Image 1: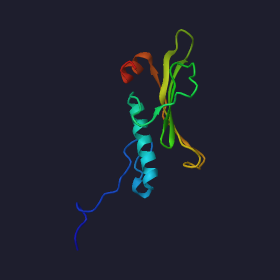
Image 2: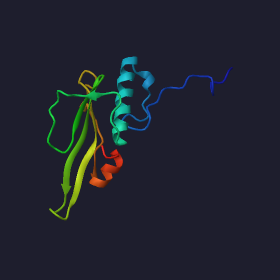
Image 3: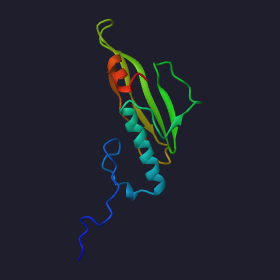
Length: 135
């Protein structure tokens, strides 16, 4: 009996992130493509980079919050939250931004209770500038 230690195909497991550890081989090719592209964009935003798969949705209204942008991907929407924020007493509190990705899937793809995956955190102005390289 031959061992499958090195010769058998290994499953495609989602890397760390929004769908960490999920076996993508159990999904259809279209579902794998949607999840893979959405994950790539999600992780890029967490690293302070622009998405590479989704394109800027120029039809979406731009909120006056400090820089939130909306993107459209194949089978998902990506919102990059960049919202001016302050916490604590005026003048003494923290000033900066709440920043991060929000993945939204249509109900046809995500019919459960939640159709969004979100990762937001607070950054000081300097922290966010360092993360995004000043973009």
